Image 1: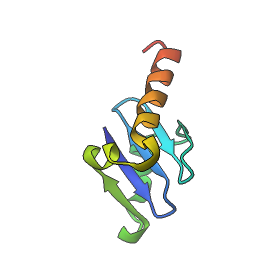
Image 2: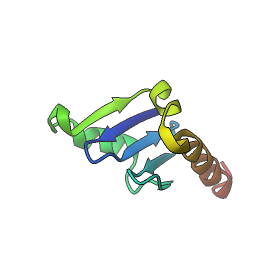
Image 3: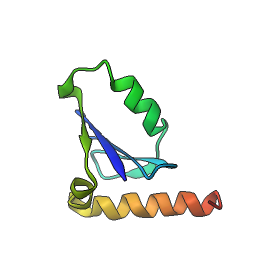
Image 4: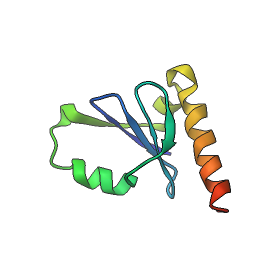
Length: 82
């Protein structure tokens, strides 16, 4: 898994196929934008606007953030029969 944290606190995470968004308030759902598109769009933004997040950092998220991400990805995969 790979992630991008925006300066507003939202984290976008991709497992390679599916991208989910974990908002600052802990809500997790399907991302309105694919990870690769977000990454491309951010290439011209200053470094204080976003940062990459490692899988270790994702696993260490507070309030069960990592579990929310994993269960959301699993739900989407099952819904799409992937």
